[in-house]
View 1 (cartoon, rainbow, N blue to C red):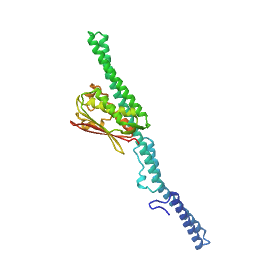
View 2: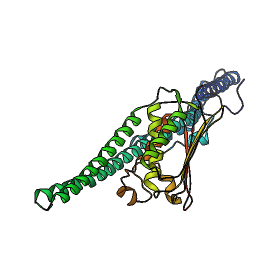
View 3: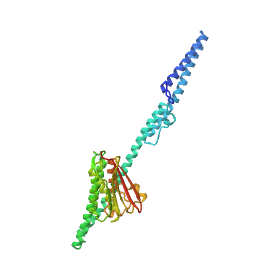
View 4: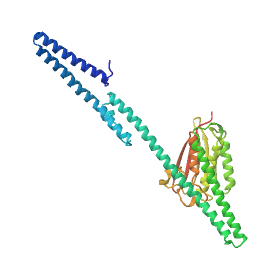
Length: 347
């Protein structure tokens, strides 16, 4: 029994049609023989008429049944020529036929191909932008180094104090380039890694150590620290330390000295939540959707002059993704920023 809404196969329909027509032609011939045994002309005429009817009706039906396939072939030719926006309408107009099912399968395949090509183009565009941004970031300190070297070469540094100041600036630019290259290498490694070998890690210890390191760099910054003891997550210890360093470094780079900040680590049986916030100037609403993009700066000048690379939160996002975790940013201009990361608990 046929399922509701599904037509008989094309070959079955054509076979039934041709068989029925042949049966009619044979019945007409038999009737002619029964009416007139001696009149050959009537019999031949009847047979020819029956065969003509079979040929005409069969040809008409076959053309009608195959016309969607011809249209599908024309559309496929257009797609093969590069127009991936074309789709086969038979998938919607005749979904129960063989051509309709073929069109639906081809449309699905084309959707996947177009999505893959779109993703590839977007990836290539991101790579071009990434290379351009990296080149720009490296050009600035290199130009500074060249400038100080030329000053020294031309004797434009009159005394030892001027030479020492120039050397300090050169070392500062070298340090900045080193941090930028290290960040780029880290992101490149993250891009190559599909899956991490996650193991139980004492996140409470990592967060506490990171807070101590931050206090050593900025001892005068007020900090509210709440760390639940014995919190374990599935992760990579080195990368989680890098995540904390970038979160706290982001506060140091983007808020004035002395701005209060908070670090909180809590755990439930289902999730571990890390919150790092500050009471700084916050992030403009139009910039919040881009803060995890590489080399993006909400304040174009301040972070560069203070030594930022524009990669800190990009590294945070990459590490979070590799740990199958979630990151959420909540920021109100003038009232600070809170970054919340939810990780898998260690079992």
